[in-house]
Amino acid sequence: MSCGEPHETDCSEILDHLYEFLDREMPDDDCAKFEHHFEECSPCLEKYGLEQAVKKLVKRCCGHDDVPGDLRSKVMSRIELIRSGETVPDHDVAASPATPQES
Image (cartoon, rainbow, N blue to C red):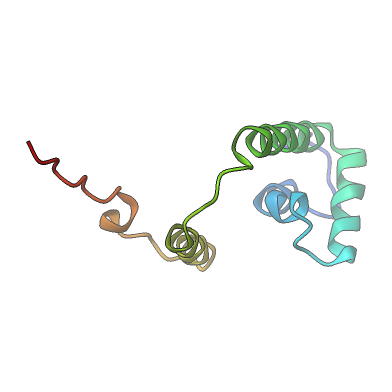
């Protein structure tokens, strides 16, 4: 996605780190670069707005549920694997088998 105009920060970099920006998990200098990019790139601004709306909706609908600690650690481990460029094994992604119910 790009507006076709050259930017100081490339659209692909903006979109690759959009959630870090949304979650304010980056230094202030980087946040300023993103804000400047959004001022001059309407496609990225639109994507930002959409992702921001989805994030708010998820928080409103699901923000009150407690997340089991082991699930959080599994998700964070997978995020780190993906960020490092490693592939996530299929068996780790699939849900664990259901426990058969007694009759």
